[in-house]
Length: 303
Length: 238
Image 1 (tube, rainbow over the protein chains, first blue to last red):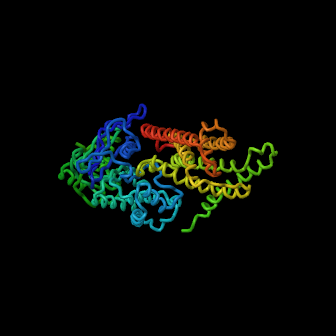
Image 2 (cartoon, chains in turn cyan, blue):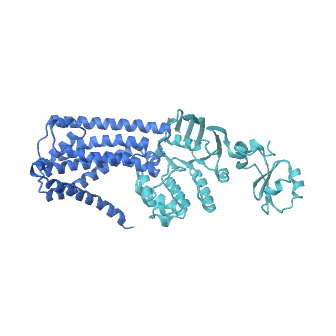
Image 3 (cartoon, helix red, strand yellow):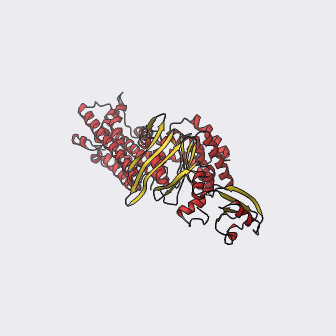
C-alpha cells in the first residue's frame, strides 16, 4: 500500500504555495517532510487529507493494483496550530467522540486509547478535562488519540511541540515501533535530530517545491560525503571551530564534525585543548544540510 | 465520574426558561381586551410555538455547530469524519431536532394544562412534523453554509432568531395566502396534526414542495461552500 502525491499545485491568490509537489509514502516507512516556515508543509498535509483542494495534481492511495482517492478518516492526524481535541471535554469523551465520527465503536477505541495514555504517563487523567492538562500533556493526549484511531497512515505536523526531552525520546521509540508494525508516517518537524533518527527518507520543501528528497543517509552522504564525528568532554565546539581549519563544523556544543581523511584528523586530535571522548565515522547532520539549503552558508568542509 | 452539576443546571434551565418565557407571553396576551384576544387563542399559539422551537433547534444544530467548531478549531477534524462534514452535520441536526421535539413537548404539555388547551392529535401526527423539519433542515444548511464561509456570524444568527419569533407568531392567524410563506404550510400542518383537524392534500403538497425546495437549496449551498472553502483554504480559519 502506498500513498502517492502527484504533481500537486496549490495557489492562494498571488502566492503559489505548492509548485508541482510529488512524494511517496509506503507502509512501514517514515517520511520526514522538512522546510523553513512557510515552505508549504502544512498546506501539503491538508491537501493529502482533503481539507484543501489542489488546483492541479492528485493524491492517490495505491493498494493491490487499485488506485483511489483516500478518505480523511483513513488518516491519523495531528494538526499544528489547530486544536486537535475539545478543551472542555475529558480525554475519554474526546476519544469516544472522535472515534465515533470515524466509525469506530467505543469498545475498540477505549482500550487502545487507554493503552497509549499509559505509554505517555497520562492514564490517571482519562476523565480529566483537556483544559486541566499542560500544553505538553495536551499534545501527548492528541497523539494518543491519533494513534488509538489506528489509521492506515499517520500525518504528524510538529508532533514534538511542547514535549519534554524524556517524552520526545519516548515518542521517537513509539514512531520506530509503529514503523515496524507497518504504519506509514509522514512527519514534519523542526526538531531535526528526531527526524534524522527516525526517518527512512526525507524531503526538503522550500517555497512550495521539493528541493531534495531521498533516503536520509544517502542524501547526507551525497551532499557532503562521510567524515568523522568528534565528541568533546566540554561544550567548546563553537569556540574551537574558529581555530580549526576547513572541513570542520559544529553539530552542538560538544560535537564537532570533520570531513576529511583520517590522517588529517589524527594530527588535529592530538592538538585539541579539550579531552576527546569519542570519535566515530558518519555523515553530517540533517541540521547541517537544512542550514545549507535554507539558511547559513554551506559548511566549509562540504563537497 | 458523576454528572457535571453546571451542565445539569444548564440543560434543566433551558426548558425551564422556555416554559417561563412562553408562560409570560401567554399571560400577557390573556390580559388583553377580549376583542383583541379573540384571535389569540392559546391553543394555536402554543402549537405555533412548538413549530418555532422545532425550526429553531434544527437551524441552530447546523449553523451553530459550524460556527462553534470553527471557533474551537476542531472543524477540520470534523471534516475528517467518516462520510465527511456534511454527513456529520446532518446527523447532528437529526439528533438535536429529535431532542428539540421532546423539549417542545416538555414545554407544550404544562402550558397546555395551565391554559386549559385540549390537544387531540391525529394518529399520524409525526407526519405533521416532516415538512416543517425538512424545511428547517434546508434553512439550517443555508445558514450553516453562511457560517462555513464567513465564520464570525453569531450576531447575524442572533438577529435571525430574533426575527423568527414575531414571524412565527404572525402565522398564528393562518390564512390561505400564507401557505406560500416560508415555514407557514409546515407550521400549519403541525398545528392541524395536533388539533385533530383533517389536512387538505393541496396544503400537504405545498408544504412538501416548499420543504424539498429548502432542503435542495440548503444541500446545494452547503456542498458548494464546502468545496469553495477547501479551494480557498478557509475551512479551518476563524
